[in-house]
Amino acid sequence: MPLPARWKEKIEASDPADEIMEIQMGPSHPASHGTIKFNLKLDGERIVDCDVEVGYLHRGFEKMCEQGTWTQAFPYTDRLNYASPCINNVGFALAVEKLLDLEITERCKYVRAIMSEVSRIADHLTCLGMAAGEVGAQTVMFYMLEAREFLYDLIESVTGARLTITWCRVGGLAHDLPDDFAERLRASFKCLDSVLADCDKLLTRNRVFIDRMSGLGIIPREDAISYGLTGPLLRASGVSYDVRKAHPYLVYDRFDFEIPLGERGDNYDRFNVRFQEIAQSRKIIEQAMASIPGGPVSIDDPKVVMPPKERVYNSIEGLMNHFKLVMEGIKVPPGETYFAVEGANGELGFYVVSDGSGRPYRVRVRPPCFFGMGALNKMLIGHMIPDIITTFGMINMIGGECDR
Amino acid sequence: MLIEKLQERFGAVLSETGTTHGQDYIIVVRESAFEVLRALACEPGFEFNALSDLTAVDWPERSPRFDIVYNLNSLSRNHRLRVKVQIPGDDAWVESVFPIWKAADWLERECFDMFGIEFRGHPDLRRILLYDTFEGHPLRKDYPYQRRQPIVPETDPIVNPIPMSR
Image 1 (cartoon, helix red, strand yellow):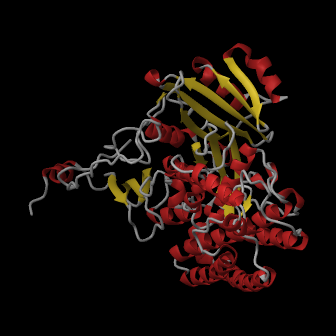
Image 2 (image 1 turned 180 degrees about the vertical axis):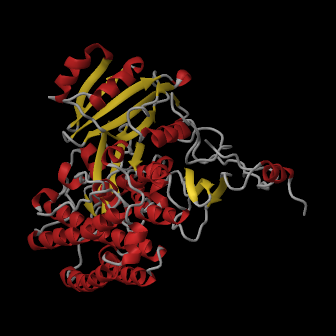
């Protein structure tokens, strides 16, 4: 095949030593876990410019939410950050409850907090394990995925599903914790502890790993704030901001936990912040399990919560109540609110608008990793191609959430 | 308390202020929106150094049609504020806040993508989540949610190279 004229001209015109090469990396690249494209301009192997293209997983989450009732949006929220779906469920439920001015039961608050933290650990394990696997530490990846498996078993015993849990409801939960939850939790944590100890030994002081992570993808404090980074990315840059502390929701103000901070804002700091957050989440879960009160998990309000099945099958009032809630949805009074929870990747916000009908007028989600991807260009310029993989891994972009 | 301070500082350009569900909001006229937002970001006492979120809401029956919603967060003073700008549907533009917060780069691109709102002064306003040949702006209420778009024909990247942006 003859060379295309465009190439010929280029080859003849340029001195190969100083040519800027254009390369498209992705959208389906084996080293990037997520469908994303980097349009790179390279000087040799050094990145001169990087245009990040997202949207390959766009499914119209916000438009779909407007089509059903408020309750029917829960399955969609599972699919935002599918590594920690519980936090998305909780965030959306809290936003709608805020619009309704509902006060949920004490036990529900504890159970939601516990499961959010379990999800957070699972999410961090995924992120760290994958990041380690991408720089060649396959052992760590499989250790961490094994630990995550135990947590998924735990989540499955509570919600009935591993990922697509659809477990929260407006005003409460689909079901309470199982009776043997405390034992299961202890068993999972036992495995988690041994895995974390192993991974700590394998990675944290590992020369190769530190060389691949340290000093790369630096984003200074002011830039991190300006780019809207939150969560581990912001904390790695030394800003002590955690929604659980700054704007406490559920019962986080009753627990004693710390916010791990980084200093330089490089990939190694991000790794460390996430690693330490696992221990903090553990601490929260233990405190919550020690003080969790009894009682129902859902409030008793027929306008919001589904009646128990015995009433639906045995009384006309129960049947009508069920019918109205399913067909017309929860009547949320007109208004708007922005509610943020601390997702595994940062501030996960829901801006919800109701017009008084049973359907959401507008559901906007603030996806934390979208902001990280926006700053990726800044983090990468001047570095080498292999650094894309570690930096991208530490942002922990989740396609479902970034592209919605 | 914040609301009083805002009224005192900005006064005439605020067309509405209030608190809903414990959250403060202000509605600013479009022409002075940029100045107000810049003051909110920089002036001591406000210090809204983070743009948490930027989005729009479409009210097709209402005039003006769009709400542009800025959810601001102050990490240093730990308060939040929602700023809304109302703009008409046939003249849908606001000034870009990219010079104030870098997060606005992608947020405004998304808002342009989904609602077709022009952000004047944005350095690189193009679609972000959808592809370039997509027709319409799907989060507008008049976009039917089951509408199908034609399949983008496959092209040979050598014959028809994908343009590099920037």
